[in-house]
Length: 309
Image (cartoon, rainbow, N blue to C red; front, side, top):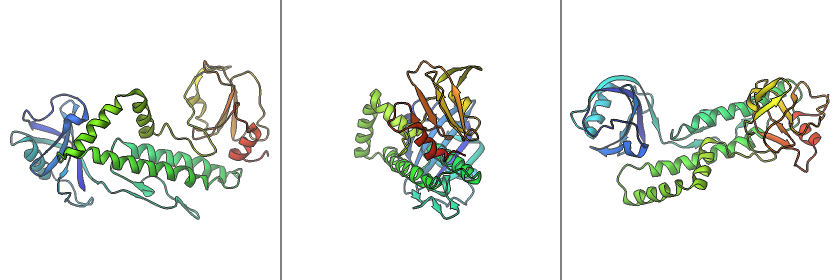
């Protein structure tokens, strides 16, 4: 499928054009051989997504012209709907691809070089940024000479399954977005809509689409951005991560040793409302150890931050 995403203004519009912001399902229409999603962004600006129901269309390298947009608007919204200004436009497809290996010797793949999918929900941005952060601190550790054996290989083992899952549920979303008035798809969409109104289902799908539910093998989930009180005053976990190093937070007033790793791990005594003893956080924000783990802290430090120096 070849589709266009464009930011436009309208010189005139019919009653079929949405006048105010609403649920995305109310923006979807199909007529005259086109499907469209026309969403008001405010101040007279609209985001238009369209394509031909046949799936035919120019390749990504072909510029989007104003006349092409006019044709889609007239076919779906009538001749009373006229294009005003074309602010920006680009083409995309529903192609789904992923490289088999994120590392080939000294070459690493990340972002759109590693995976592509239909751009639904802005997930490709989150996915690519998290690839870069995951790989970045491991490359830095290697360049600085303290990376434990196999650290760079964990980039593939951690990130490849995450992207594979995104590709899977963007495929599912593409089915639910079917605008061809397919009765079976419409029935499935109605069932999914009901399920998404349930708090547990909504929370699970939100975690999946945002990536906040990721739990790496041998590590933990992403650290919650807690409010903290330290000897320097109030702060948050995220602010303490700006150094790009690991972070050991002790909440129970008990000092812990990071002997020989002060150049790669910060140790901060802090207080928080959470009932937590201590937590070790990797530079990418994922927990590497907590005081409730059976594994000793020294083992986790060695695994992710190398031996003492």
